Image (cartoon, rainbow, N blue to C red; front, side):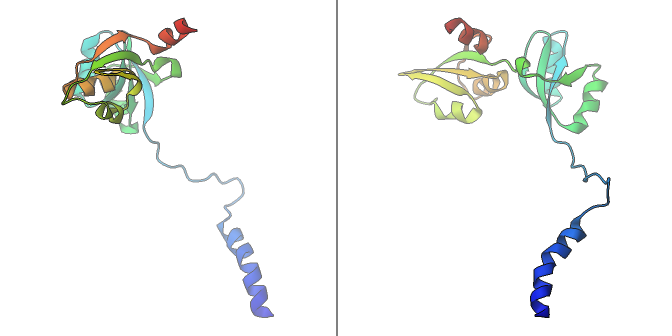
Length: 158
């Protein structure tokens, strides 16, 4: 009977042992990357961020949206740029038209992260962030931006 009681109370003992002190906060984990809106004055500043290794998703005339690691915030400040947390409205995607041929298929575009809307014989219509447009161009695709903001196109349809 003593063995049964010991086994029955073991989970209670383990739970009590794991409990922290009253008022104690759980340990903070290291912060991961975040999406930051970085104010820029011209395209040259966006190019400087690209050359510095920043992962730019969106490039607009007055700002970029970058995936920023915690340690990179000091690098942004050293470039005399101001970063704030990106809002959903800052994440602008382009409507693009991409011709296909024997060497350039649809799947690599999907693998990059493009959201394919339509495939017609030798053409893809998709929405994509600037990052994926750059990467597709680097892979040899010819990308034509049909509309600078997919949300505006969708709003006109409704």
